[in-house]
Image (tube, rainbow, N blue to C red; front, side, top):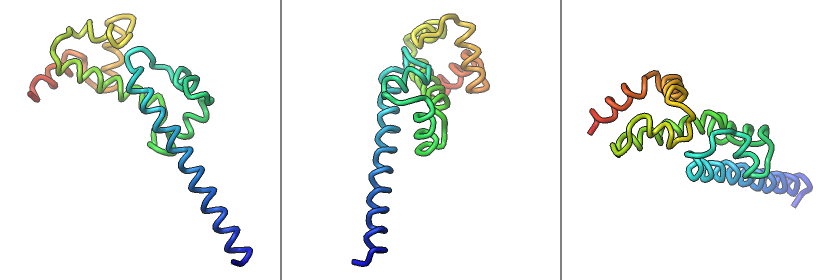
Length: 130
């Protein structure tokens, strides 16, 4: 091999290792998110569980998903809200408390901001699908 070929091979291998590390951190974040969605909604909490800085977590999420960790957390909270509404075993207020919102108004504001609908409207839309 020429020196140039050796350098290129080394760079390719290094790139693949870096890419794997990036993907593993992002995947681990999603795993933690699915486990802790009902009790943790702060990016700092997830960064601490992953032993990385918030900036590092932000970088890896944007690189792998094109979204910030906060965007991903909020999307997951909305998905969990929809799941609980589909089950039909909880009232809207109970869903808010189950997802660790400290008041129905905070839950309502969060849902309205992230879906454009009130929790009641969202619930009606969810129920009309089935």
